[in-house]
Length: 115
Image (tube, rainbow, N blue to C red; front, side, top):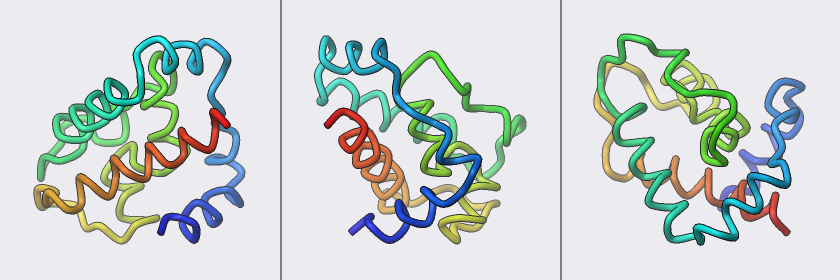
């Protein structure tokens, strides 16, 4: 389901430079995928879902958590990137379906990184 967008993102010089490091993979192994999914849901809901984000474009760090790295790799890091890559318009709160799309895309990217 996410094959086409992940393929497009892989051709972006900026997006394709994001990779999980060994410490990120170890974190995932220690915490488990369920915890990682819970973190992704929380980050998307709090940092990406609101209709208006005062620091949009700067709300997602580029390191410090595997989900943050995945967000940049999948263009789910800010509303501007969501609009550009996923055609999800800014100015409206994300629907539950849109939040699930972002979380599942992030998790799919991570799964491909840890194989």
